[in-house]
Amino acid sequence: MAHEGNRLLLGGGIGSGKTAAASCFAALGSLIVSTDDLARSLLVPGTVETGRVIARWPEVESSPGVIDRRILGRIVFADGGLLAELEAIVHPGVAALVNAAADSHPTEVVIVEIPVLRDLPGRGWPWIVVDAPEPIRVARAAGRGVFSEAEVRQVMERQSTRSEWLAAATWVIDNSGDREQFEEQCRRVWAAIGD
Image (cartoon, rainbow, N blue to C red):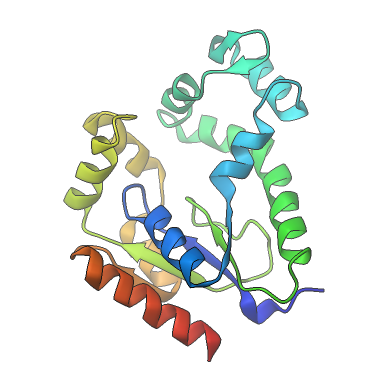
C-alpha cells in the first residue's frame, strides 16, 4: 500500500496554472497523474464510457465512435446538471486509474492534477491549489485558443469558486506574478512536502 503522506492533489480553476505547476513538480521529482489525460483515455473509440456519452449526447459523435470534445464541453458547461451526468460517467474510471497509478508507485511522491474540487481517489489527500485573480485566468485560458473569453467565463461558472479552492488548500501557489516567483513557490511547497 502506498504511503499516504506522499500523495497530493493539485488543483485550481481554469487558467490558474495547474499544468505549469505540474511541470514544475515533475522537474522536482514527482510523478504527475493528470485526471484530464485519464479522462481523455476513457473517451476514445470502443470504451464503455465513450458508448455511454454518445448514447446520451449523439450530437458529439463526429465520426463512428469518436467524440468531439469541444462540442461535448460546450454542452455540459452550459448546464450544471449535464456536467454532473458526464462526471458520473467518467469519474469512476478516472478514480480507479488514479488509485492504480498511486499504488504502483508506492515510494514516490504522486501529485494528481485535477480540475475539479473533488477528491477523486477518495482518500483525503491534501490539496496544493494554484491561484490567480479572475482577469488573469480568463486571459490565460482564452489565449490558448480552445475557448473564447465568454466560454471561459461559462466554464468558471460551473467550477468551484476561488474562495472554495483556497479554503480547501493545504498549500497555495500564487500564480499572479512572474515565472521566477511562481517556480520559487513551487520549490517551497516541494520542500514542505518532504518535511
